[in-house]
Image (tube, rainbow, N blue to C red; front, side, top):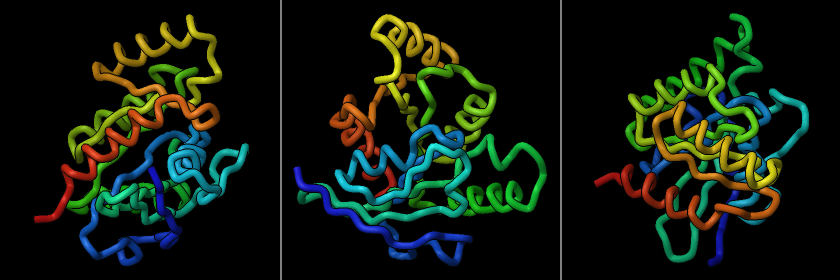
Length: 195
């Protein structure tokens, strides 16, 4: 199915977010969990900048996406937590203000991305506790291709046990789980359609 996607804006604050009421799905996760890579895999183009160094995404990068004849929506690449949040620096304060402003919007929902190789990190558990109370959200296990099959199965069981929710394993490299992820995105987007 054809995917049309384009970069819209790097949002530094609420005034920069889209105002047309389309659903907005944020990619939330630790620095270097693979948010930008997953956006590129979903859109089948090098749209989001990726880096091996954590903490490169400092603003909320907003992408307008439309898949096939479906309604358009926004994918939002939020700055990663865990890197800039190590201390109360101006950067971490900006991160917190930016994310709180984003999730206060009625069209916001979230995909929490967790690295399947590191199940149950405290910061991921805290993020999930907060997200599921704030907005419609789901958990995606990234970098599934990095683990051998047996380890992957054990890691996914552990993640699901820790979060007490289902986790969708995906790989930006092999494409594993992307079709299922599109279905999940459709559900989240439809849950946030404006009347």
